[in-house]
Length: 101
Length: 125
Image (cartoon, rainbow over the protein chains, first blue to last red):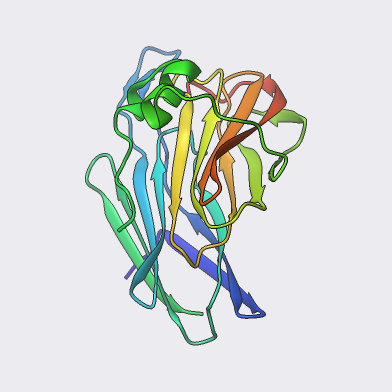
């Protein structure tokens, strides 16, 4: 379903470390040196759910670097648990990715 | 459920305004339980790896602010009860500045600051 989100997980002592890469321009917008106008285009919200429970919401501005990288850890997690990542950008773009730990 | 987007804070243009929009009129104490791990020198301001490690109990939110960015608020991460006090990402820095991490936790609101030297600013952040 998703082709913009790549997720890797590693579990240790019931804690999962989630690392993800998202392909996105994260364009701040404005006028380029050559006069070209560029519209702002950036992910404004990224949400992670673990077995259906929201565990992380990232409210982003264009200050997050292009092709965002994000890592965080969740306790009380086990191999086989469901992880779902979803982002929404400021132009209404959406992508979603579901995986098992 | 987890709090919504801090819309007003994303519209502020100075750090004081950003902190005020997020936390109101309070002085946020510095805590040595928050560590900002990043290189002292960033050659390319467009991609600056940064890691926030927190030893406070029950971290509820982590806000990352870059003092010289046109929009200082870079991101606010809202964490659930089973999410640990840790986040790593890559941010843009317009110029050499201080990066501020403000952490909301069961123990209260605290901050840490780290100066980062930028050789080439992240284009038009």
